[in-house]
Length: 358
Ligand code: ADP
Ligand code: MG
Image 1 (cartoon, rainbow, N blue to C red):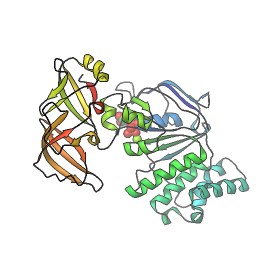
Image 2: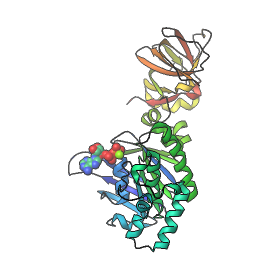
Image 3: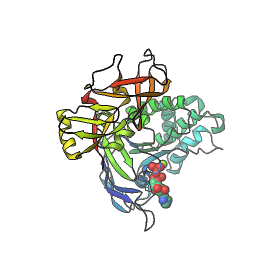
Image 4: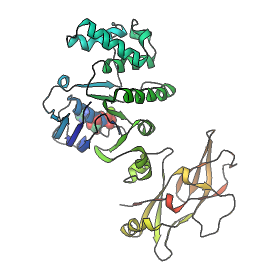
């Protein structure tokens, strides 16, 4: 276990061009599970490779357990990696694959046996130790890859999209397995994914990245409740937050646009003052409520025409055309709605998010 400190870490490939990672600052707690999430190309893998020592950072400082690791070879950093392409050695058994790094480290046979057996027990793959990788399912191979990392008893785990080769159902299962494993071992872990659901369900803290820049580092709940900007607001939460461009009607104290008129709360005041004449209003699909009756004109409503109805079982998603934009609303399955219906969606002022338009 160890604290990992990233201070002003940047990476620029070549002398020109943008930074792949730009001034990355994050200090983990000892034993923390930190998720890096963001769209493809935002710098997640580069960050991991810098922590691992596979890539030299152009600027900044990386410390593992208090030690500055710049210039330290990957093998000396006491970390273990599980990456997306978890190439197992095909000619070796599961046991051989898991034992390999320990053999290199000149562990005794008895020590190796103890470590491998223990890791296999934790991962529930004891019965597979004699098999070759080709005789394993995708999920089992992933466990072996995790096993290879665990046996080394590193101070830090780095996992870069380790589940992306698995099918959806297995991914959900393995997600829970990895969280359980982390709870059991308590090893500081960096986990990379582009999938916000994976991030939200696994991370104790999540760093949201965009174009090499950290947008926000926070707990899942805080990211959802208090997104720092429009990017985080739109990225975290599924289905995604809706955004409406509104004119601020200061006299009436409303935020208005084609098809909607919304009241701000006192807490919105500073954002409104900063915004000047125009503001982005964000509202989550789960906070738009279908009105059975025609609401009064000054109610907090968005009006539009239903273009798509998607019954998902537990909930139904509808897409509603409001002026120039399309909103998603989450409604109850029993609320009978058809394509072409005109609807009014109500939302509480407290559940509106304001972002400036620049
Ligand atoms: P992610 O893992 O979030 O998808 P990466 O860290 O792989 O993103 O890439 C971040 C950016 O750095 C991308 O623009 C990518 O093209 C660039 N990049 C990554 N590796 C290299 C490299 N070895 N040489 C040049 N550019 C690279
Ligand atoms: Mg990547």
